[in-house]
Image (cartoon, rainbow, N blue to C red; front, side, top):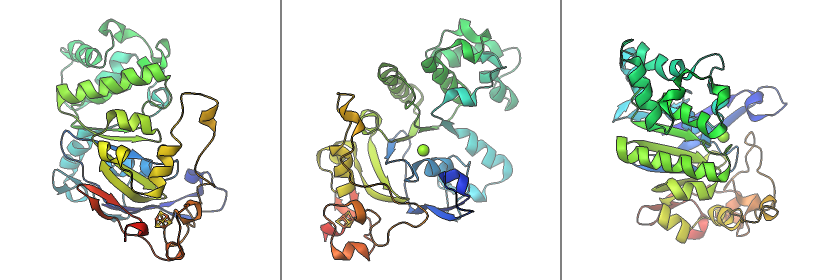
Length: 313
Ligand code: SF4
Ligand code: MG
């Protein structure tokens, strides 16, 4: 459960000096062990911020993160470090997180060696196992990141994350930079790893098709708030919230020319001064007078299905 005030214009790509942005507003999510929860929404909706809070890379100004029922903020240093190792992040661009001067062996092996998960003598075997898990030929361990393709570099990032024996992977647009055919390979790798290692995922993506492919449950965010949450089957067959319905309507067609057009009217409003009432009202085709003043609460609209829209009254 988290609220996050992000200070700093740079993060939002804005010029005004130090506005306070409520990047997450009363967001509460629970992820069960072994579950894949997709977080979907347009850029600026707070989904990356949520991922960084869960990963412990960013502190929530209000609320808390619980790992196995225990507050991250209340753990001792050692305990907190262990919890942080158990939750690993996989970013969009593996290149920027791989040191170009390090060989793959060092990239993958440094953290587990540091944390005593392997020894210097066993390191080569240990690294080979992680590479094999991520679908890389262990013979390539002495190469540098630039000698790999984009998809293979993402596999190096995944092997590095697996090397510290995580329970949970937070994937933030982890396949967004890859060709569609490579995307499918990496998504299937994530699903295989889930089976083999009982991994749990928070899967952040702007791409509904990607989220549909991988998730058990989906959380839809808009301007820092959760607007809808349901199982993947329910969300895609019976979307409730007008924003979710608009997102589904504008799903990229297979025709690349059509992909460039958006069905949702208007720009995403500035997160610095979000519209009052329902944040979505300026773009919502169903908006009523009430929507401009009153915030809709997230409420049950079916079994395991929640939506935040006044139309449900
Ligand atoms: Fe549209 Fe009103 Fe529902 Fe918001 S609360 S999504 S503006 S109908
Ligand atoms: Mg993002």
